[in-house]
Image (cartoon, rainbow, N blue to C red; front, side, top):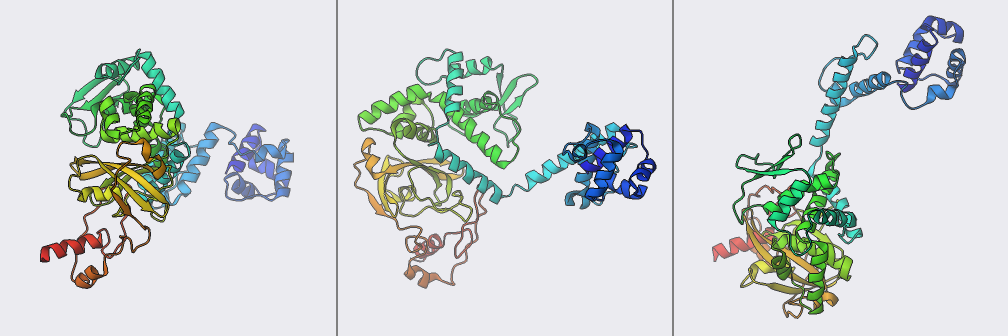
Length: 471
C-alpha cells in the first residue's frame, strides 16, 4: 500500500498520467494501476524501470512512510477495512481516493480507531489480565517492591506543602490538592463503579460521601487520584498498563500517608528493639492494616535487607492479592498467576480462621519444601466476607519481629496433593457420589476457576460440611 501511494505521488508530481508512464516502462496502464492501489507487488525490474522513468532513486519508492498525511490516512483506511472485525459488520468498503472528502476520511478513520479500541478492551480476557498481573509482580519482585521515582515524587509533593514531620493529616491532603490545582467535592451520587471522578476542565475531584470505617479510606482515594497527575499517567494502553498505573498510584498514596523518612525511622527503632509489628506501624500513621502491610513491604527489604511476602486471602482460602521476594512458593495456575488459587490449609493465612481468637495477634511458623517461614496475620471483616492479611519472612529474620518466638508451628508439603488438595480417604469413601454442591461464581477479576472434583468448590470443604451435618 505504501509503495503504491509513493509511486502515485511521484507520478503526479511529474505531471504524468498512467498512460504516459506505461508507455515509458512498457507496462499496461491497468498493471500500473494495480500496483498503485496496493493490489499487486511489482517485480524488481519493473520497479527499477518505474523509478528510472520518474527520475527518482528506487529507495524513495521503497521508504516505509507514506508520502503525505492524506496518503497515510488512505493506507490506514484500507488496512482497517481488510480486518475481519470490519468484514463481520457486512458493510461495503469505502475507497479512499481523491473523490473522498478529507473530513469524511478523517471521520472514517476516527470511527475505525474507536472500533478497534473497543474490541481490544473486550478481548482483555481474565487470562490476559492474569498474565499481565504476573508480569507486573515479576517486576515488583526484581525491585523489592521499592519504587524510587515514586518515593521522590511523593517527597517533592510533601515538601511543596511544607510537611516536615509525622503522618499526613487531612489538612495536609487538602493543601496538596490545592497545590496541584484541584478542589475536592464530596457527593452522594457518584457512579457506583467509580472511586472518584475528576473534572479536568474545572479542576474538581468528586468523591463519595463515605461513612467512617466503611469502604476505601477517603484520604487514600484522593491521593490515588492525584497520583495519576503527579506521575504523568495517560489513558491506559492495555490491561498491563492499567494494572501498572493502579500499583503506582496506590504506592504514591501510601508514600504520602506514611512518608519514607518517618516510616523508616519508626521501623529502624522497632527493629532495634526486635519488635517489628504491622499493628504498631498501622497505629503510628493512622492507616488500615492492609495499607500498613503493603507499605512495610515497600521499605523493609530496601532499607533493612529483610525479604518478605504478603498475601490477602479470603476465608474460603482463595488468594486475592500476593507478593513475595523471599522465595515462598505461592500456588499458581499454568500462566503463573497467583490470584484465584487456593492457599495451603496449613499456612497461617488459612489456619488463623480456625484459631480460638482469630481477631487477636496471630503468629505461626510453617515448614515448607522451600524452608521455614514465620508469619503474622490479621483478620478483617468486609462486605465480601472475612480476609486474612499476612506478612511473612524466612525463619532467620523472625527474630526482628514481635511474635517471632511463637511456638505455633505447622508443616506444609504443598503442592504435593496429599498435603491438603486431596481430601482424606475416609471422607472420599464416605461421600463420593453422594455430594453435589453448586459453585458460587467468583467475583474477583483475576480469579481463574479453581480445579477440583467439583469445579469452583473445594471438595474437602464439601465433604467436611456434609460430615458435620450428618453427625
